[in-house]
Image 1 (cartoon, one colour):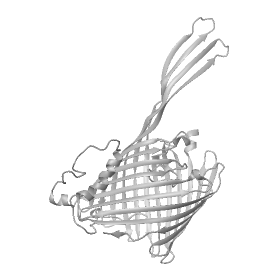
Image 2 (tube, rainbow, N blue to C red; image 1 turned 180 degrees about the vertical axis):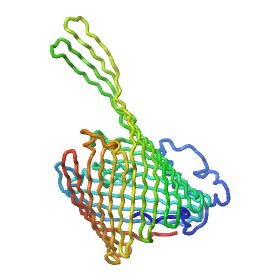
Image 3 (cartoon, one colour; image 1 turned 90 degrees about the horizontal axis):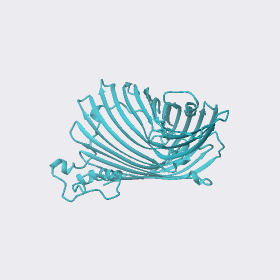
Image 4 (tube, rainbow, N blue to C red; image 1 turned 90 degrees about the vertical axis):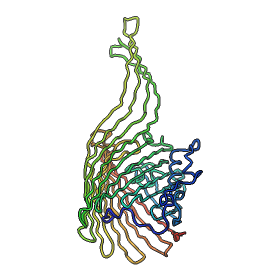
Amino acid sequence: MPNPVRKPAEVLRSPRRGGGCAGAATGKLLPRGSVLATGSAPVRGQSLFSRSIGWVLALAPLACSAAELSLGSSASLVQEFNTNLFVTTARHRETWGEGFDAGLHGGLAAERWESLWSADFVNRWYPGNSTLDYSNKLFSARNRLQLTPRSSLALNASYNMDSTLTTLNDITTNLGYVFLRLQRNSWSLSPSWIYLLNERTKLSTQYSHQETVYENREIAANRAVDSLSDSGVLSLDHQWSERVALTAVAMASTYDLLVAEESFSTVLFGRNREDTVRTISVVKGQTGGTGTIDTQSLSVGFRVNPTETIQIAFSGGGQFNQVSNPGDRGSVTTARFTRGQPRPVVGTRSFDTASRSTTLTEILSAEASKRFDKGEAGFSYEKSLSPNLLGTLISNERYSFSGSYPVTDRVTARMRLTVNESGLSGGGSGQLAGFYRRSLLEIGAGVNWTLTDKLSLDANYAYRELEYPSSQSLAQDHALYLRLNFTPDTMHF
């Protein structure tokens, strides 16, 4: 459901309680010898990510004192059943899965800063088919510092060791819909700055860096591609009136595809029809390298609350895409033997199949929600582009309907319907464009039953239908999920 219209002044809420930053309040330097003050070189072999996470987790506790500490946890037992887990038209069988999920979260908060962190562990086992088993580990940290009444800084970081088929809609890296199970390690670092120009206008900037590495990627067609991505966002939010807000967002990103370089060689033999000329060609070259996807986009939109229970939001704009493919490069040496000539003619030519293409596409998003006396309903639409596992730019057009209704004080029913149309960016025709064109329908319904203040039960049904228009084939999946959740009280110190 969309969030209600938020005024710019609410960008950093008041702290819960606790003292301020000792160093910030007094202007004193950190003690000599402390981790942040030494400036010593990192330990040999220590990655940029581990150093960044160390700064993120250590910044607030070491620089500040008199803060409130909170610690919490959660655990879940899971049972699931799928008739077609990979939503494939090939031969398949039903799968039963069981799992155990656990989570830890904590935070430190003071007058002008806040530091939050979490660790989640997701485990699934499929009796009789252990190749589907997976164990995901997800770590994140969020830090926020109020510099002045108008300005605040934030620094978020994450490290994930997960599987790409955890969910069909891969939210972690916005890969779109994924139908392969590949183990993946990824980390991200994202600093941001927010400045209130006045009581109605907010300016925000954000930079994000992410690295992704796949394991056992050779099992995927053409192999999954490791990647590096950097993006920058500049946004402006203006509260036009009590019920209307205007937005503008500019974004630029670079997505590097780290295709493994490999050498190849082959020998080709040929002759003409009369058999008067024969050729021998030796082809040597390399494939792979670094490809890039550069995008620049600009969109404008609005959020409006016609009534206290209705919210509508819309944004639209354009995105310019530049795609570079390293292709293959090398040389072909050919010896030409002609009947009646004593010596062959030998020649060498080089080749390079690197390519570069540009496209201009529209990007759109719309949301609408309605709260009732009991329950709520919502609709969303999005048209976007994102690279898939193989580094190919794919367009996605998604429609989603959702609703919830409290049957009793302890039982809530929910439903969701999603339609997603995807295809090669820029459309295109031919076999390749047909391969990427697909339509996905998802229908889900379930109930949440609060058993006690610490125990709850989720029961859900999902239907998925995947259509491949190029081959006129259809894949279907029926799934059942049962989850028992335990959430003890959060401890505060």
